[in-house]
Image 1: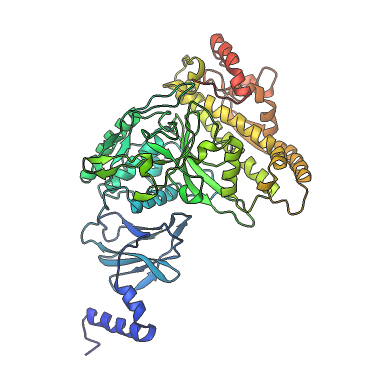
Image 2: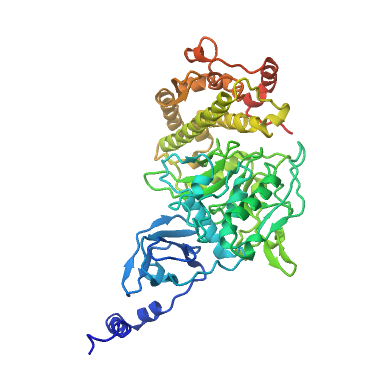
Length: 593
């Protein structure tokens, strides 16, 4: 009789046997399935279909998760291969490649105990988009989504022509085709650096049914940071699943409003889209904005913990005026921090809209005390000198201290990363000039060379070159920094002065060993050593103009071997103004507006 019994009876018998063998508590844990208070499991797409991969993402904000288990409609329970995200928040991502029709149970476990659980009907309906507000669960999911979106081995060079290929890649984007409309095939996403944090938030809000807020702001002045108008709160996505065209329209409205001043508002300003947070690991989640004093912004995407053999890393992405998106590591050459009356720089969180009786509002600073799933507001960064700011962050990234040589090699790698990114930017400018022969790109006057619109913004490189010159100076100054801040390094009994001298010798060696290659005007390749580039620092102070040939943009001058193929020169009037502006670059000091 048992052999011919229907499947539900067999499953009851199996559960009874498990209870007798392993004890009742495990059976009770397995029989309940629900989200945790600090851990959640999501699946994508919202309406799973048989034979179509089911993406699974588990996220926790209290401590690490260790395993994903899936129980199929037949009752078979198996562990799922997964990709791990760092924390906080901690995450596990796995894919069920070809699920059959029926009900699946997905468990996120920690040390053998279920931290969160969800049941999914494949081929039998649609899941829920969530609470419709930026609660702790959605904030955690956003952070994990950002981390997996830009994931790659730390040593890999990660760059894209724009944000579009990132969002269209189902392997990266957990929310790819989340609404089941094929909506990512034609997604619109070409933000520059100021737009990038807004468009990522808007995309996430589109898929998850959330509001997004943004403000029109001034650009500030030499004596005051930008000020913003009242928030515009876009609720289109909260009213039901929207099409890719609606997302495009919303994105365009946002991009037409925001600019490089939007992230530079004063740290204590309530009327802002972003607010400062404490310099603590628990507050700096993926998705956190870094606004530098001069208008550039980056978005944190991953923390890589320090080990005995490898230094820690803090990774971020930024977008450029040509819409390219590149991953970078934290260091002084990319995260510029300075005390200035014209900006409120530093790490900032998004001031997510909250529901109230009138609909939605942005929280004030006094509201931001850790409730609502938002990081607490903190003025800590306002009290720090640049050197203290970098020392504090270095302590977070490498709490065990750094081996001097490992510190040098990591800084060198970051500099080479910047140089390779500049190769691509200059090449983009060359491609534009070749496609528009005879064109002279108008050059703005004064500080506007750093902030403008049109081809100059897209193809000149004054901001990038300023950061590059700073980065070269940081690498050069590293031995002196070891003498000034020995507490940041692990000398293992070696005298700090001796270690610094050893690094100076290593630096001289590496200058001759590291190279970049650029394409000259005639299409031939030319290789420059890092030593060549350091020797050309003075030429690189005026190498940002796309009207100059590519050879000049890499510091070549008459008499240098690579100059022979140069066929284009900026107008004399522009050359004169670049000489006038040269002190800004020589002193690596952005001028006031």
